[in-house]
Image 1 (cartoon, rainbow, N blue to C red):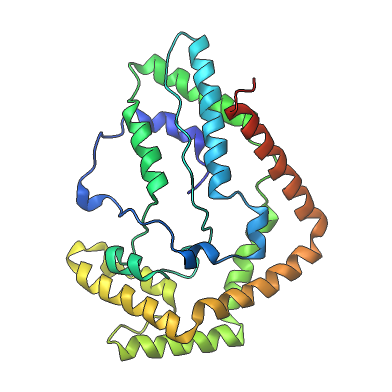
Image 2 (image 1 turned 180 degrees about the vertical axis):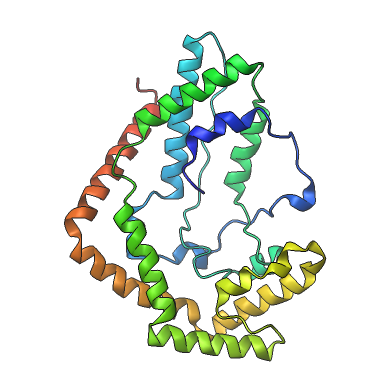
Length: 273
């Protein structure tokens, strides 16, 4: 889930009431394993709960703005998000997801509930209302969003550490080698790593659904047999912890910005002006 608040007003009016069942992702809440997969940088990024609260606060402010312009639009309801920030970090890791969705990303029940609520309140009556809603949502987002809560430094370090562990960490490379051997033993292609398996062009063809499911199930099984996810997580944890120490002042400012944003979003959704 991304923080894409300002774009939602422009899209809502044209969204279809329903989508073909085959095109909708399955609803599967994160497993205990996925929820427990944590890294040090997680504390310096918005959680799913944070994003839901900020988006809802912006929506509340947009609704008040629209009322002042003579329009009435129901507010989005609160939903209880499940935080699993690294659920797909190392590819599919949950057997149920592999069995039901292959390499496709599922949605959570809360995300489905929010989507249904947004669709239920409908589109806009005319272009003027749509334009007003877009402006109001942008203004609301600007009031809730706190500069500094997004850290380009963190994003860069996270990418670099992930790539460093994937390509140069000896323990991770050894585990990936064992994972590849395990995949071959189960009749799968020679993939460089789980991310390459998930990105196989074959999965764009829905006629390959059975092959995709078989590959994803083998992938999860091989991750478990080789302990790949935990080995990779530990390698990243070590480097992320060192980065937090090296850039403690920068990350301290990020945490302060996040706390300020959380407080402002909470104030708005609880009825503050």
